[in-house]
Image 1 (cartoon, one colour):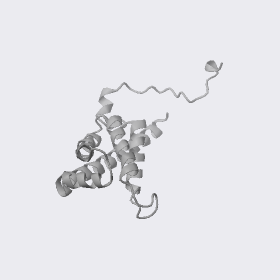
Image 2: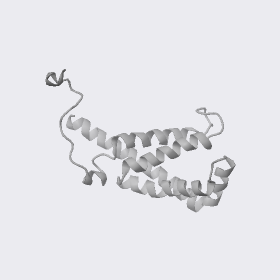
Image 3: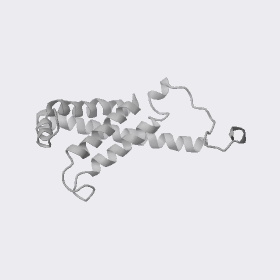
Length: 151
């Protein structure tokens, strides 16, 4: 991969990670300090979510702690997978309304879930704490045609 493409990819991953991490921290803080976890639990119970007390605390902590981890790029794929799962569950259980229509309320969950899946697949990029604990990437392009590999 060319160095330009690699730099652009890392910048995109950094921006995506910071945006998703910042939104998650904001959402988690709002659930914890502004609304309160009891209000979150009541909303989840009304939506028919099983074990709403556990789910309310889990969602709040995943967003708050996971968001901070994403901001620094720590355990990026694992945290992003949790946030993607949360987005899917939000669409399934708490969605309501008309999906994917203006005012339906699904946009935030869909976009944050898609961004989380990108971070699951590509990781946090070179500007992350995760990068300190991984082996350097090889310059080989496995998608390039190589006659010696042909069968």
